[in-house]
Image (cartoon, rainbow, N blue to C red; front, side, top):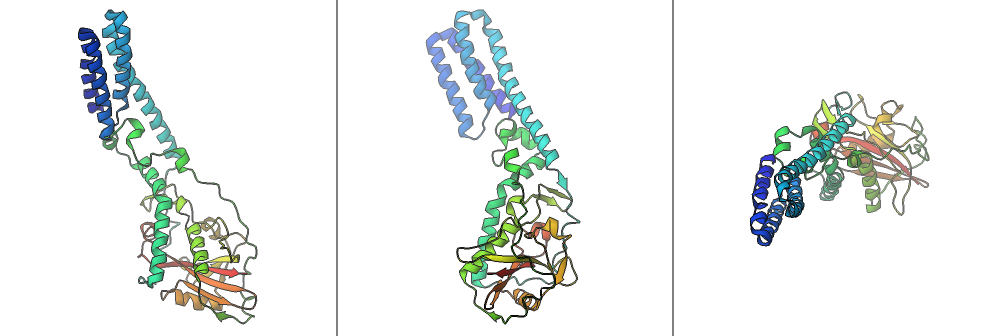
Length: 358
Protein backbone atom coordinates (compact mmCIF):
# COMPACT_ATOMS: atom_id res chain seq x y z
CA UNK A 1 0.00 0.00 0.00
CA UNK A 2 2.99 2.31 0.32
CA UNK A 3 3.38 2.39 -3.47
CA UNK A 4 -0.32 3.08 -3.93
CA UNK A 5 -0.11 5.90 -1.40
CA UNK A 6 2.87 7.47 -3.15
CA UNK A 7 1.06 7.24 -6.51
CA UNK A 8 -2.02 9.06 -5.19
CA UNK A 9 0.17 11.65 -3.47
CA UNK A 10 2.02 12.26 -6.76
CA UNK A 11 -1.33 12.90 -8.47
CA UNK A 12 -2.30 15.34 -5.72
CA UNK A 13 1.00 17.17 -6.11
CA UNK A 14 0.42 17.59 -9.86
CA UNK A 15 -3.12 18.80 -9.23
CA UNK A 16 -1.79 21.29 -6.66
CA UNK A 17 0.06 23.07 -9.51
CA UNK A 18 -3.24 24.08 -11.11
CA UNK A 19 -4.19 26.80 -8.61
CA UNK A 20 -0.89 28.61 -9.26
CA UNK A 21 -1.69 28.90 -12.95
CA UNK A 22 -5.47 29.10 -13.06
CA UNK A 23 -6.14 30.68 -9.66
CA UNK A 24 -9.75 30.15 -8.45
CA UNK A 25 -10.70 27.60 -11.11
CA UNK A 26 -7.51 25.65 -10.46
CA UNK A 27 -8.18 25.64 -6.71
CA UNK A 28 -11.66 24.26 -7.29
CA UNK A 29 -10.31 21.52 -9.55
CA UNK A 30 -7.70 20.64 -6.92
CA UNK A 31 -10.22 20.51 -4.07
CA UNK A 32 -12.77 18.42 -5.99
CA UNK A 33 -10.07 16.04 -7.27
CA UNK A 34 -8.49 15.72 -3.82
CA UNK A 35 -11.81 14.91 -2.21
CA UNK A 36 -12.54 12.39 -4.96
CA UNK A 37 -9.19 10.62 -4.51
CA UNK A 38 -9.59 10.55 -0.71
CA UNK A 39 -13.12 9.20 -0.99
CA UNK A 40 -12.02 6.69 -3.63
CA UNK A 41 -9.42 5.15 -1.30
CA UNK A 42 -11.91 4.92 1.58
CA UNK A 43 -14.75 3.51 -0.56
CA UNK A 44 -12.62 0.67 -1.89
CA UNK A 45 -11.24 -0.20 1.55
CA UNK A 46 -7.74 1.08 0.79
CA UNK A 47 -7.67 3.56 3.68
CA UNK A 48 -4.53 5.64 3.17
CA UNK A 49 -4.12 8.15 6.00
CA UNK A 50 -0.93 9.70 4.52
CA UNK A 51 -2.77 10.50 1.27
CA UNK A 52 -5.70 12.11 3.09
CA UNK A 53 -3.37 14.05 5.35
CA UNK A 54 -1.26 15.06 2.35
CA UNK A 55 -4.33 16.49 0.62
CA UNK A 56 -5.29 18.71 3.55
CA UNK A 57 -1.70 19.88 4.08
CA UNK A 58 -1.44 20.75 0.38
CA UNK A 59 -4.58 22.84 0.72
CA UNK A 60 -2.98 24.76 3.61
CA UNK A 61 0.24 25.13 1.60
CA UNK A 62 -1.67 26.63 -1.33
CA UNK A 63 -3.28 29.21 0.93
CA UNK A 64 0.18 30.21 2.19
CA UNK A 65 1.60 30.24 -1.35
CA UNK A 66 -0.97 32.82 -2.44
CA UNK A 67 0.89 35.38 -0.33
CA UNK A 68 4.39 33.98 -0.72
CA UNK A 69 4.66 32.11 -4.07
CA UNK A 70 8.40 31.61 -3.70
CA UNK A 71 7.83 29.30 -0.73
CA UNK A 72 5.66 26.95 -2.77
CA UNK A 73 8.39 24.45 -3.82
CA UNK A 74 9.57 24.20 -0.21
CA UNK A 75 6.00 23.82 1.02
CA UNK A 76 5.32 21.03 -1.51
CA UNK A 77 8.29 19.07 -0.21
CA UNK A 78 7.50 19.89 3.43
CA UNK A 79 3.89 18.70 3.36
CA UNK A 80 4.90 15.40 1.71
CA UNK A 81 7.56 14.77 4.35
CA UNK A 82 5.15 15.85 7.08
CA UNK A 83 2.27 13.64 5.94
CA UNK A 84 4.35 10.49 5.54
CA UNK A 85 6.59 11.24 8.52
CA UNK A 86 3.65 11.69 10.90
CA UNK A 87 1.83 8.54 9.77
CA UNK A 88 5.08 6.55 9.87
CA UNK A 89 5.71 7.60 13.48
CA UNK A 90 2.10 6.74 14.30
CA UNK A 91 2.52 3.29 12.75
CA UNK A 92 5.80 2.70 14.59
CA UNK A 93 4.09 3.51 17.88
CA UNK A 94 1.48 0.85 17.13
CA UNK A 95 4.17 -1.68 16.32
CA UNK A 96 5.94 -1.00 19.61
CA UNK A 97 2.66 -1.63 21.41
CA UNK A 98 2.27 -4.88 19.44
CA UNK A 99 5.75 -5.94 20.55
CA UNK A 100 4.82 -5.27 24.20
CA UNK A 101 1.62 -7.30 23.85
CA UNK A 102 3.56 -10.23 22.34
CA UNK A 103 5.72 -10.30 25.47
CA UNK A 104 2.64 -10.25 27.70
CA UNK A 105 0.85 -12.95 25.67
CA UNK A 106 3.68 -15.20 24.47
CA UNK A 107 3.44 -18.65 22.96
CA UNK A 108 3.34 -21.39 25.60
CA UNK A 109 3.42 -25.17 25.35
CA UNK A 110 0.28 -27.05 26.38
CA UNK A 111 1.75 -30.56 26.10
CA UNK A 112 1.87 -31.12 29.87
CA UNK A 113 -1.59 -29.66 30.48
CA UNK A 114 -3.62 -31.37 27.77
CA UNK A 115 -4.75 -34.95 28.47
CA UNK A 116 -4.87 -37.54 25.74
CA UNK A 117 -8.16 -37.88 23.85
CA UNK A 118 -10.66 -40.17 25.58
CA UNK A 119 -10.18 -43.88 24.96
CA UNK A 120 -13.93 -44.49 25.00
CA UNK A 121 -15.32 -42.24 22.31
CA UNK A 122 -18.80 -40.98 21.66
CA UNK A 123 -21.58 -41.34 21.39
CA UNK A 124 -21.53 -38.95 18.45
CA UNK A 125 -25.21 -39.20 17.57
CA UNK A 126 -27.21 -37.45 20.26
CA UNK A 127 -30.98 -37.28 20.48
CA UNK A 128 -32.59 -34.51 18.38
CA UNK A 129 -33.14 -32.38 21.50
CA UNK A 130 -29.62 -33.12 22.74
CA UNK A 131 -28.13 -32.19 19.36
CA UNK A 132 -30.08 -28.92 19.33
CA UNK A 133 -28.78 -28.00 22.81
CA UNK A 134 -25.27 -29.03 21.79
CA UNK A 135 -25.41 -26.90 18.64
CA UNK A 136 -26.66 -23.89 20.63
CA UNK A 137 -23.74 -24.35 23.02
CA UNK A 138 -21.27 -24.30 20.11
CA UNK A 139 -22.80 -21.06 18.84
CA UNK A 140 -22.41 -19.45 22.27
CA UNK A 141 -18.80 -20.63 22.53
CA UNK A 142 -17.96 -19.25 19.11
CA UNK A 143 -19.61 -15.88 19.74
CA UNK A 144 -17.83 -15.52 23.09
CA UNK A 145 -14.33 -16.39 21.92
CA UNK A 146 -13.81 -15.60 18.25
CA UNK A 147 -12.75 -11.96 18.40
CA UNK A 148 -10.09 -12.43 21.11
CA UNK A 149 -8.71 -15.49 19.29
CA UNK A 150 -8.48 -13.43 16.11
CA UNK A 151 -6.67 -10.67 18.02
CA UNK A 152 -4.09 -13.14 19.33
CA UNK A 153 -3.61 -14.64 15.87
CA UNK A 154 -3.10 -11.18 14.36
CA UNK A 155 -0.67 -10.41 17.16
CA UNK A 156 1.57 -13.43 16.50
CA UNK A 157 1.02 -14.39 12.88
CA UNK A 158 1.04 -11.05 11.05
CA UNK A 159 3.44 -11.48 8.11
CA UNK A 160 5.59 -8.63 6.76
CA UNK A 161 4.11 -8.99 3.28
CA UNK A 162 0.57 -9.00 4.64
CA UNK A 163 1.34 -5.94 6.72
CA UNK A 164 2.88 -3.98 3.85
CA UNK A 165 0.23 -4.89 1.29
CA UNK A 166 -2.80 -4.78 3.58
CA UNK A 167 -5.33 -1.92 3.37
CA UNK A 168 -4.67 1.07 5.59
CA UNK A 169 -1.57 2.31 7.30
CA UNK A 170 0.21 0.80 10.27
CA UNK A 171 -1.93 -1.26 12.62
CA UNK A 172 -5.11 -0.01 10.93
CA UNK A 173 -4.47 -2.52 8.12
CA UNK A 174 -5.79 -5.29 10.35
CA UNK A 175 -9.38 -4.22 9.91
CA UNK A 176 -10.93 -6.99 12.04
CA UNK A 177 -9.95 -7.65 15.64
CA UNK A 178 -7.00 -5.27 15.85
CA UNK A 179 -4.95 -6.40 18.90
CA UNK A 180 -5.46 -4.10 21.86
CA UNK A 181 -4.69 -4.33 25.55
CA UNK A 182 -8.36 -3.85 26.44
CA UNK A 183 -9.48 -6.59 24.06
CA UNK A 184 -6.91 -9.13 25.30
CA UNK A 185 -7.13 -8.55 29.05
CA UNK A 186 -9.34 -10.94 31.04
CA UNK A 187 -11.31 -10.15 34.14
CA UNK A 188 -9.61 -11.12 37.43
CA UNK A 189 -10.72 -14.51 38.75
CA UNK A 190 -12.51 -14.52 42.10
CA UNK A 191 -12.42 -17.61 44.32
CA UNK A 192 -16.01 -18.65 44.95
CA UNK A 193 -16.56 -20.91 47.93
CA UNK A 194 -19.06 -23.74 47.63
CA UNK A 195 -21.90 -23.57 50.18
CA UNK A 196 -21.77 -27.33 50.90
CA UNK A 197 -18.60 -29.08 49.66
CA UNK A 198 -19.05 -32.79 49.04
CA UNK A 199 -17.28 -34.99 51.63
CA UNK A 200 -14.36 -37.05 50.37
CA UNK A 201 -16.17 -40.35 50.83
CA UNK A 202 -19.30 -39.30 48.97
CA UNK A 203 -21.23 -41.77 51.14
CA UNK A 204 -23.46 -39.36 53.08
CA UNK A 205 -25.92 -39.22 50.20
CA UNK A 206 -26.35 -42.98 49.91
CA UNK A 207 -28.31 -43.40 53.17
CA UNK A 208 -31.47 -41.77 51.77
CA UNK A 209 -33.82 -43.47 49.30
CA UNK A 210 -33.49 -41.91 45.85
CA UNK A 211 -35.76 -42.17 42.83
CA UNK A 212 -35.06 -41.34 39.18
CA UNK A 213 -36.99 -38.33 37.97
CA UNK A 214 -37.56 -36.77 34.54
CA UNK A 215 -35.37 -33.86 33.50
CA UNK A 216 -37.11 -30.54 32.89
CA UNK A 217 -35.91 -27.58 30.83
CA UNK A 218 -34.96 -25.69 33.99
CA UNK A 219 -32.35 -28.32 34.87
CA UNK A 220 -30.96 -28.39 31.31
CA UNK A 221 -30.67 -24.61 31.49
CA UNK A 222 -28.85 -24.79 34.83
CA UNK A 223 -26.37 -27.40 33.59
CA UNK A 224 -25.81 -25.62 30.28
CA UNK A 225 -24.96 -22.39 32.11
CA UNK A 226 -22.52 -24.26 34.34
CA UNK A 227 -20.73 -25.92 31.43
CA UNK A 228 -20.48 -22.68 29.45
CA UNK A 229 -19.05 -20.88 32.48
CA UNK A 230 -16.54 -23.66 33.16
CA UNK A 231 -15.36 -23.98 29.56
CA UNK A 232 -14.53 -20.26 29.83
CA UNK A 233 -14.69 -19.32 26.12
CA UNK A 234 -13.54 -15.78 26.88
CA UNK A 235 -10.23 -17.30 27.96
CA UNK A 236 -9.68 -19.34 24.79
CA UNK A 237 -6.27 -18.60 23.33
CA UNK A 238 -4.89 -18.77 19.83
CA UNK A 239 -3.92 -22.39 19.15
CA UNK A 240 -1.23 -22.84 16.50
CA UNK A 241 -0.19 -26.29 17.75
CA UNK A 242 0.29 -27.93 21.15
CA UNK A 243 3.68 -26.24 21.59
CA UNK A 244 2.41 -22.82 20.54
CA UNK A 245 -0.67 -21.53 22.36
CA UNK A 246 -1.06 -17.84 23.23
CA UNK A 247 -3.34 -16.18 25.76
CA UNK A 248 -5.06 -19.31 27.11
CA UNK A 249 -6.76 -19.22 30.52
CA UNK A 250 -7.62 -22.50 32.24
CA UNK A 251 -11.17 -23.79 32.32
CA UNK A 252 -12.86 -22.48 35.46
CA UNK A 253 -16.27 -21.85 36.94
CA UNK A 254 -16.75 -18.27 38.09
CA UNK A 255 -20.15 -18.48 39.75
CA UNK A 256 -22.60 -21.05 41.05
CA UNK A 257 -25.14 -21.85 38.29
CA UNK A 258 -28.76 -21.24 39.19
CA UNK A 259 -32.18 -20.59 37.70
CA UNK A 260 -35.27 -18.82 38.98
CA UNK A 261 -36.44 -21.99 40.74
CA UNK A 262 -33.26 -23.97 41.44
CA UNK A 263 -30.03 -23.41 43.36
CA UNK A 264 -27.00 -25.66 43.87
CA UNK A 265 -25.40 -26.83 47.11
CA UNK A 266 -22.22 -28.30 45.63
CA UNK A 267 -20.55 -29.20 42.34
CA UNK A 268 -17.80 -31.77 41.83
CA UNK A 269 -15.98 -32.24 38.55
CA UNK A 270 -15.83 -35.86 37.45
CA UNK A 271 -12.53 -36.49 35.67
CA UNK A 272 -12.20 -39.20 33.03
CA UNK A 273 -8.92 -38.52 31.27
CA UNK A 274 -6.12 -38.14 33.82
CA UNK A 275 -6.75 -41.22 35.99
CA UNK A 276 -7.01 -44.95 35.34
CA UNK A 277 -10.55 -44.93 36.75
CA UNK A 278 -13.02 -42.04 36.83
CA UNK A 279 -12.72 -39.90 39.96
CA UNK A 280 -14.44 -36.84 41.39
CA UNK A 281 -12.31 -33.87 42.39
CA UNK A 282 -13.23 -32.46 45.78
CA UNK A 283 -12.70 -28.81 46.66
CA UNK A 284 -14.34 -26.10 48.70
CA UNK A 285 -13.99 -23.86 45.62
CA UNK A 286 -15.94 -24.05 42.40
CA UNK A 287 -14.26 -26.30 39.78
CA UNK A 288 -11.23 -24.72 38.11
CA UNK A 289 -8.58 -26.76 36.37
CA UNK A 290 -5.58 -24.76 37.59
CA UNK A 291 -6.52 -25.72 41.17
CA UNK A 292 -8.03 -29.18 40.75
CA UNK A 293 -4.82 -30.85 39.60
CA UNK A 294 -3.59 -30.59 43.17
CA UNK A 295 -7.00 -31.22 44.78
CA UNK A 296 -7.90 -34.50 46.53
CA UNK A 297 -10.10 -36.98 44.68
CA UNK A 298 -12.68 -39.54 45.70
CA UNK A 299 -14.08 -42.60 43.95
CA UNK A 300 -17.46 -42.17 42.31
CA UNK A 301 -20.52 -43.05 44.38
CA UNK A 302 -23.16 -45.46 43.12
CA UNK A 303 -25.27 -42.73 41.53
CA UNK A 304 -22.31 -41.26 39.66
CA UNK A 305 -21.11 -44.65 38.47
CA UNK A 306 -24.53 -45.62 37.12
CA UNK A 307 -25.10 -42.15 35.71
CA UNK A 308 -21.75 -42.12 33.91
CA UNK A 309 -22.70 -45.33 32.09
CA UNK A 310 -25.86 -43.58 30.85
CA UNK A 311 -23.92 -40.50 29.75
CA UNK A 312 -21.72 -42.77 27.64
CA UNK A 313 -24.91 -43.91 25.86
CA UNK A 314 -25.98 -40.45 24.67
CA UNK A 315 -27.91 -39.14 27.67
CA UNK A 316 -26.84 -35.71 28.88
CA UNK A 317 -28.43 -35.31 32.31
CA UNK A 318 -29.30 -37.89 34.97
CA UNK A 319 -31.41 -36.71 37.91
CA UNK A 320 -32.56 -38.38 41.14
CA UNK A 321 -34.38 -36.93 44.10
CA UNK A 322 -34.98 -37.80 47.76
CA UNK A 323 -37.30 -36.26 50.29
CA UNK A 324 -34.94 -33.34 50.93
CA UNK A 325 -32.46 -33.07 48.07
CA UNK A 326 -31.82 -33.61 44.41
CA UNK A 327 -28.66 -34.88 42.75
CA UNK A 328 -27.71 -34.62 39.13
CA UNK A 329 -24.94 -35.78 36.80
CA UNK A 330 -24.44 -33.77 33.60
CA UNK A 331 -22.14 -34.45 30.67
CA UNK A 332 -19.27 -32.27 29.46
CA UNK A 333 -18.81 -33.13 25.79
CA UNK A 334 -16.24 -32.08 23.22
CA UNK A 335 -17.64 -29.36 20.96
CA UNK A 336 -16.03 -28.50 17.64
CA UNK A 337 -14.10 -25.72 19.43
CA UNK A 338 -12.52 -28.30 21.76
CA UNK A 339 -11.16 -30.58 19.04
CA UNK A 340 -8.19 -28.43 18.07
CA UNK A 341 -6.64 -28.74 21.55
CA UNK A 342 -8.15 -31.95 22.92
CA UNK A 343 -8.28 -34.00 19.74
CA UNK A 344 -10.81 -36.80 19.40
CA UNK A 345 -14.20 -36.29 17.83
CA UNK A 346 -17.14 -33.97 18.29
CA UNK A 347 -19.36 -35.34 21.06
CA UNK A 348 -16.62 -37.20 22.99
CA UNK A 349 -17.35 -37.34 26.72
CA UNK A 350 -14.58 -35.33 28.40
CA UNK A 351 -16.00 -35.25 31.94
CA UNK A 352 -19.12 -34.52 33.95
CA UNK A 353 -20.46 -32.34 36.74
CA UNK A 354 -21.91 -34.00 39.80
CA UNK A 355 -24.44 -31.64 41.44
CA UNK A 356 -26.23 -31.64 44.75
CA UNK A 357 -29.25 -29.32 44.64
CA UNK A 358 -31.65 -28.02 47.23
